[in-house]
Image 1 (cartoon, rainbow over the protein chains, first blue to last red):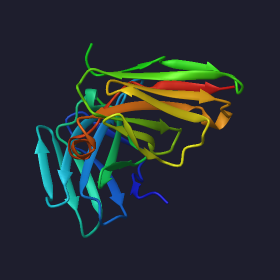
Image 2: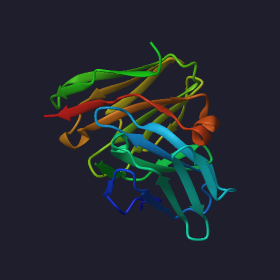
Image 3: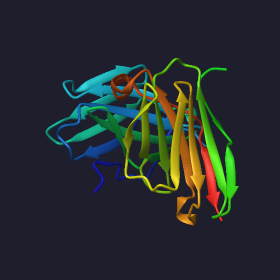
Length: 110
Length: 116
């Protein structure tokens, strides 16, 4: 059974608007959560992470929110740019192992 | 060259062939990983090496055999594969296992494997 779930396989957002990517998890023992971005024909690239003791982490246009009671993680991208079009994976760590979701394909259109 | 480099980028092999995937990193990292990405599935961890020692084998069939001769190189030896093994195989590295789960892994571009 998947411990990390990204229920939306795709998302389409207009340039300049906010993109919100969601992730749900089942294991309350996860201690870190990470977001990766993947372009076609390239490997995933680390974007941003958050410790389970925090509820928000911000890096430029990217903010990750963690709701532990709901076991829910989200990535906000503001403002969205065409270059943000990619597949986004969330991942969670338990001890020293990363467990990934299936990914959400984000398309930012002009 | 910097980062994580994987060769070949694409590989087509028959079920009776033997081939190897290569991964090389020049980041000074001590942990290296093999992941498998199949269509519409999460990235699946296959093997982990930490300071050249294999520390994780995630119930991977024996037709996949990893090798880590030094901290910069990682191989995945393939033999008698099945068509369902067709996937993108990704190599990654991190400073060590603990750092990796906090600050992320550095991934290579992957090898797209097709078994016919």
